[in-house]
Image 1: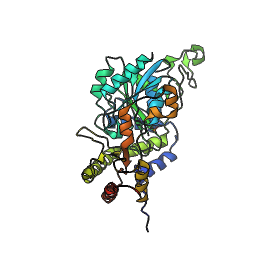
Image 2: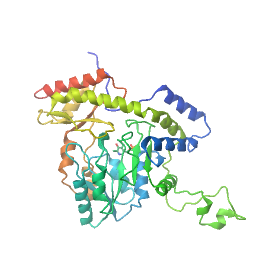
Image 3: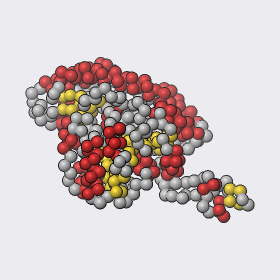
Image 4: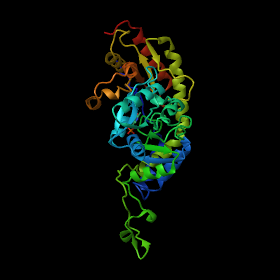
Length: 398
Ligand SMILES: Cc1ncc(COP(=O)(O)O)c(C=O)c1O
């Protein structure tokens, strides 16, 4: 029997010119912070409609920088949907602020205005200053930002979009309703730099602060030196001198990876077009499998098509998710769960106790991401759909 090569649920698309871009960066003067960082940031801002873009070394760092720039800290709290990657909640905790886990829509996995309102109330009941919310554009679906802002703004909250799944969707990055948007350039994302992240904002002061926090909080502008004696010699700024007015991190994205990002960014539209075409084909091929297996409903709204997720009624099929995933794997088809509810992670369950979030349980209990990336061929898509149809056609799993 020939074993088919495994189709992963997602993967990067690296072409020869990407490799050449990295090679050129390796031969250049700067391996770490050189001119390519600013070039990548400018290109990223253009691609997302952002006024400012600050590159960092992960989507997690991009979220953390945004949380820091909002001055979140002990005594504060931020609302985070429970269906997300650990990073969204962890970025809040890294500041010392508490996380209020909110429920999500059971079919889309998205934070809703009602769930945000309930989260704010729950956080305030605990005595926390609920100062921010981090909606997540799950799978590339776009949250109803206007509706979330209608709840957040009167409540005095700032919004930070976790846009790690949503690079290339409409003008996400322009931050029309939010203080900032955080992106990831991890390999399975819309473009890849290996590890990498970018925070966009419309606020110039916030962008500058995030850029400083990314590098230990260092400031080299003589106009801001507090120690005049150390900073100046005969009234002239010391060229070697810098100051650290506030505590920061090393979240720098090196020139080498910015070069890869610069090479990948112009391909975003091409990648998105292919993702849309694959999604359309999956939609058609999988439609007959409803209701036991159906795509996460995605309507007409702009969609980033980061992941293609289906909702499966495993019990109705007489199976479990493990057995279903193993049956797919036996046919060379990878799949993954995005995501188990974060509030139930042992760390968070210990910290905040058990929470009843039925939407999160319903979404997480059924979701499954199936192979989805630009290099996936139509033949692969058909094979995945046929395999799913065969599995769903089985009354019970052995
Ligand atoms: C929704 C979401 N938020 C945040 C992150 C964190 O990004 P990174 O892995 O680049 O730190 C990810 C990445 O997997 C993600 O999917």
